[in-house]
Length: 209
Image 1 (cartoon, rainbow, N blue to C red):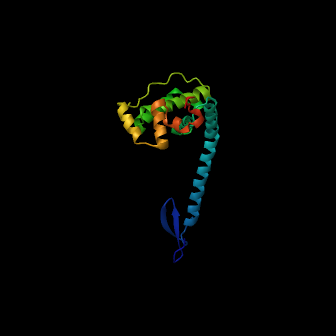
Image 2 (image 1 turned 90 degrees about the vertical axis):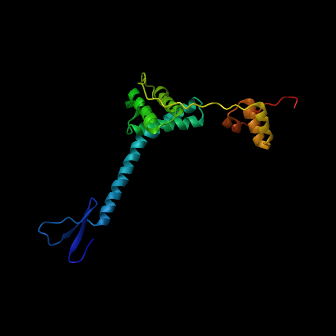
Image 3 (image 1 turned 45 degrees about the vertical axis):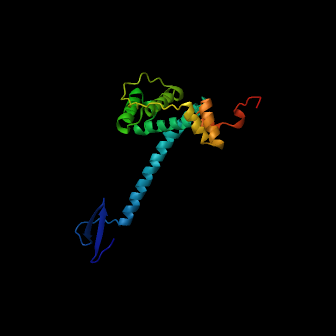
């Protein structure tokens, strides 16, 4: 960037200074636009390097995890949860391949979840199950016993059970599909997703009806 009286704006590393052309020693001149372009190119190259690293380590391994989960006929939500926990485990250890890690790294990750992230006990157990599945069924690596970890606190929950009269009063307020769903949940003990995914032919009907 040129100013009056033959002066130039010297900009590098976020600092600015005015240099004269008549200086006794040569002056490095880089326009601000060129420096911004250089920074943009460096950031783009860093993103490309990160993408190549993830593609070389992450997706191939995660594809193997998904194939192993589907082979055992686990649910789709289990597949997504296992893949997400394994990805977070790899990123936590700065993208080190799981084959190069073991029980101590698993302990560090689970302790970090409980102490820093403050996850629930069920979430920590799900992460542990995903990592054990990775080493046992995907990598077929024996990691031995996991060192002691900081366990997440288990919340005390008192179950709420409705009486028959309360359930009857609740059903009286419902009609149509909602009433059918609640009746199946209460009478057959189905989970919500199982009930919503059920087809009409999968519901048994007595022959006299």
